[in-house]
Length: 416
Ligand SMILES: Cc1ncc(COP(=O)(O)O)c(C=O)c1O
Image (cartoon, rainbow, N blue to C red; front, side, top):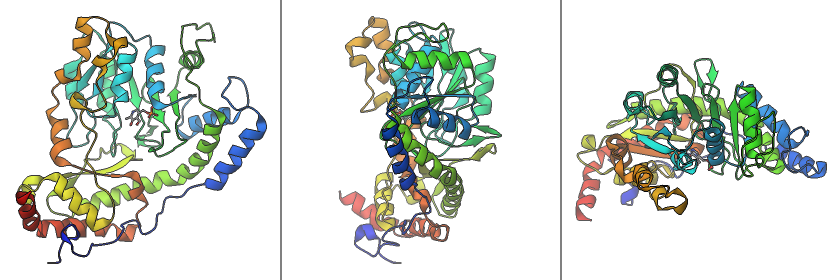
């Protein structure tokens, strides 16, 4: 039994990613950037053939969407989706309790109440049964997030939204290019919102996009992102949520790469899931049969501390990181006690005592999300999908090695 790297032994590999199968189109990005610069059309103005207009068309086409509107970032995209649906004071919006804070904080930013709902422990996405239980007469929308390494159960959620006459807005910040049945992610809900922030599968530093299938909604969003200028007889006060053509230029190059990377991410995701399935005390997330392409923002699997005789997840992750030369983390902190979600502290949200109480996240109980976050999740960033297929077994080997050495780790844990 060889000594664990975490305890001073030789690692299984210095770096699981000896090289990457994911491609980049940096030359194309540069070419489009120069073109955008020379064109003099540096912003995203409706009706102009700017670089932004071109990427807008290409992103719609990649996702088989009728309309796309570029937005300054994914947070503003979700906010404008809610505003374009006239969701605000007195309304409730159901969001998952495990997500980046933006999914919920935008609901407060339009003065509605985010209702935090627990997740399905097999996918880490919002639990449709709990969504049904959370619906009230005030519910106007559900925002499922296709979180990390799975899509939310769109069949169930679309049925619930349809039966209860509420809107469904897909938060696709983690899922550029996933497919459910024959539908692209982002075109099943009334809106699909994407982020192009630095950590995402496609990155322009900052940036976002909304997909929609209704022309009237498209013009509403165009008006909302552009200071409330009147378009198509729509006129509601707003601010500036526009992107620049320089961001769009980079995104055109990123999209060219993503046409290829999307399938690689899906294929390697399955292969890494299989590698996990062959190891003791861990399991892959459950993949729905309609999840035909999974473009994951992170690779996640589930750890069972009991199978490792009580070894804490954080020690397991540290040992795995040391064996594979890749950092393994846990999930976001659930929103009920997240370090970045405390909307009740902001003066702008102090509408009245009842509202402040309703948006205080500590009022929500999310036992499944808490358990996943504290004890179960093992997460690596999406670049791991560049791993060569013939090296995926190293993941199994590393977990087996940790399992066989668990008592040494338990001793170390006890001495701390
Ligand atoms: C699930 C989710 N939704 C929304 C956002 C917001 O996107 P942005 O950072 O572009 O505002 C993020 C970004 O991290 C996210 O992870």
